[in-house]
Length: 228
Image (cartoon, rainbow, N blue to C red; front, side, top):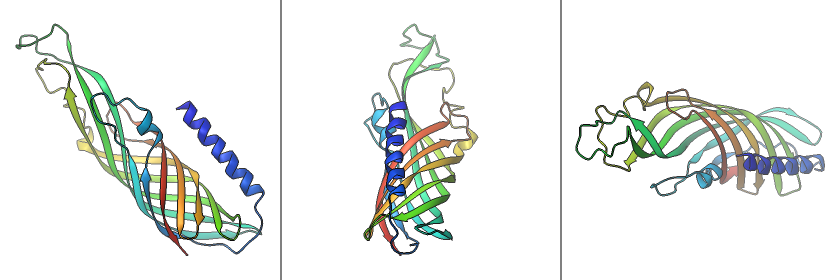
């Protein structure tokens, strides 16, 4: 994840350079529209075990409220309503409580599973952002802000051995009945060209449930359509 953070830091520095060298063009533009796209870095880098590789994703609608106009730029409050899927895999996870008297016991105190866990959330985002127009065609926004999601959790497993269990090893895995509350810190930028918008969003997310993984570092890439 350190390499991903370094990559994202370089992009942020490039964006900051563009901001410092931007010229004054038209007045503030309040954009609204929708965007969608996958989470790439975590989805591509993690081990999935016996599961096929798949991707987290996010899609939703956005608009903005103008807060302040500056000489060459403006400050906005972007609001978004998104549906976002977070996911992770636990390959070769060990669970204890094996029934040693059952037929097929392999002599180990645990069974081995591949696990896939995902969270489906509906999120409200409030993202203060700095907007500037780089030229007559390209508009850039840099944002930092918070979002809050609510939703559910689910999982599937594949047992890699034939050990039997005296109790369900996943009795406590769902936590809180599968309900989740997930605040996120968002940092990134959007580039608008005509009706097209490209969005890059680094997110740190915490899930309030009892699963073995609660903290996520993700990089979502999205494309969409935006209108004045």
